[in-house]
Image (tube, rainbow, N blue to C red):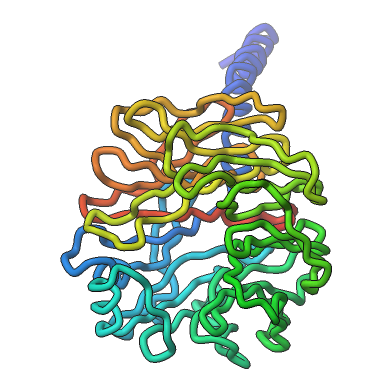
Length: 408
């Protein structure tokens, strides 16, 4: 059959037109792929029961560290070998800067001590009744290393983190003679150094500045800053009896914390030298504590503290609106915007921005179940990460760092 030159030109035109028509779809696919890659691969969190009879310990002992992909797929438990002993549990607590290691707390409490605590409505920490340690878990192999058991300084160790700017150092908190002390140690768990060695007060909320040169903590509910070795400690005077959980801004120039009365405290900002104190936002009567059990809990719940944006230009926090606790973002000049408008009775808690600053993970209690959600901040669209049944909960999300973001 003869093929005329005009036919070839028409065929080439049709092919070109088809290619041109497909370009928008290809571009959309590339954008979607780039957006998916912009999300950290995993979010670590903790799952547990909330309605078992027997009080706090019966439910806490069901806690298990878990990870899930940022799109809600691939949920799995990790470090399962750490919770094989009866009355023990695991909690997801963070990541190594490269995202390869998970920080997992492992707890154990004797049933006899748990019964005493329920009867007396208070914690009783002692070496025969409690053991809490911090582990690094290799996600590729599942191997767990208990760093706080090496050259042990306490039976109760928590809050492990990788020291910013110093890959060979770690920080954590340990109970010493009934008081919490911030510690610094080597990457292998040795050379543990008490940063408030002579203190007889309870120090908590320990963090290091992004350059690793300064630390902050609250001691007897007053905020302190000090050099990395604990020297030159100085109180940031607020005039409030309750000050809690100081966090450094990305540039190290500001500290964010909550201040006020216990159960009536709000996000405050201060310069690193203690000057420039100001109230950043009001929580509208919210107590600042999210109950994480559906049975009576003598401790009351989990502190719901504000969080810095990645670039340090704003703060995420929660506040009461009618019957709800909703998510907000406030700029450093005090301009606040509401991020969620949820069904009546919804409670949001623990806002946590992704390392690229484009997403927000948080907990939300809707229809009576505490689930984890992710919001795309560009359009405030939400997606649910977990699909737990009544009587279960997912709490305390931690984004996996991605290469190049410098860790969390």
